[in-house]
Amino acid sequence: MSTPEIGSLTPQALEQALISLGQPAYRAAQVFSWIHEKRAQRFAEMTNLPAPLRRELEGRFSLSPVQVESKRESELDGTVKYLFSLPDGECVEAVLMRYRHGDSLCISTQAGCRMGCTFCASSTLGFSRSLTPWEMLSEVYEAERDSGRKVGSLVLMGIGEPLDNLENVLAFLALLSHPKGKNLSLRHVTLSTCGLADKIEELAEKKLQLTLSVSLHAPDDALRGRTMPVNRAYPIPRLMQACRFYEERTGRRVSFEYALIAGVNDSLEQANALAALLKGTLCHVNLIPVNEVEETGYRHSGREQVFRFQRALEGQGIPVTVRRTLGADIEAACGQLRKSRLQAAQSSPGG
Ligand code: SAH
Image 1 (cartoon, rainbow, N blue to C red):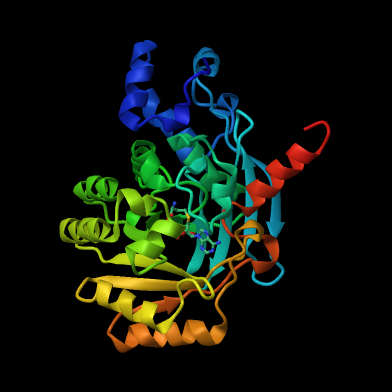
Image 2: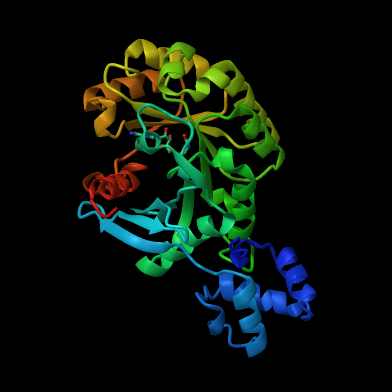
């Protein structure tokens, strides 16, 4: 069995671990600060700990961060896409984007995904495993270290379904927002879900100040059931009930993602059906022309169609943003880089 990851431990768990090694409690704060504030990469760097303790920790815990396996930088907008490898050889992606208000990082929460959305590159390769709290944190720390930039906001919109890994995601968020660590306010965090309604309700009960973003992509059950298999388990009325519950419990408005696919979900009737569905809820819609993934055969809607769709929603009082496409030249859509890497490994004789 592999050794436990010290970076996944809460301050309390770390304290218990050190006390059980016969150490005074204050050592826990020192170790926590080395990992989460000073971002030490090895126990040997923790110079205010006695050398025997450093060796003991080395033997009992792992501190392996994710490693930058490759990266691509967009010449269009400075977006950096990372392919990170995990200690067991799995790989995930993260994308660092520049905005006027600061840098935003999109991270993966699982290696692969079980949700099977038909338009998504992550679905085509199946699911390996969920990421640990430390692996998610380490995506943030490594992106900051490598780029020399500071992550000011975070989106859980990379590979994987965060609510299919809720326990680890909650532990990760607690560490990420800890005042003695990265100290990122959860107001700067967005969690995106394909719509696991019961998990949305479980998250709502935690009353966190993060933004919930729901990937809707269709205004009716018939279409959504075809493009997003999750809809068969949680049809739209059930999903909307969970969204209202989230809004009630947290006081936060829910965002809805809608990727426009030409001739599939981008008609004026569908815009009106979407408006009718969302009317009266405290919401926000993000429209994005679908990123074209080879196998899916889907094409993104043209500018005109996007504009018409937007106008129809706005005309009915629904707040809408059309998302800019960032990193279009570097396969920045989620799952694309991992897919290229795995496909290259499959087709090379040695891999
Ligand atoms: N599983 C979560 C988060 C990961 S996907 C979720 O479903 O929300 C992040 C976002 O990208 C989701 O809104 C997802 O529907 C969207 N997405 C996936 N493939 C896409 C594509 N080819 N074009 C545009 N958006 C896509």
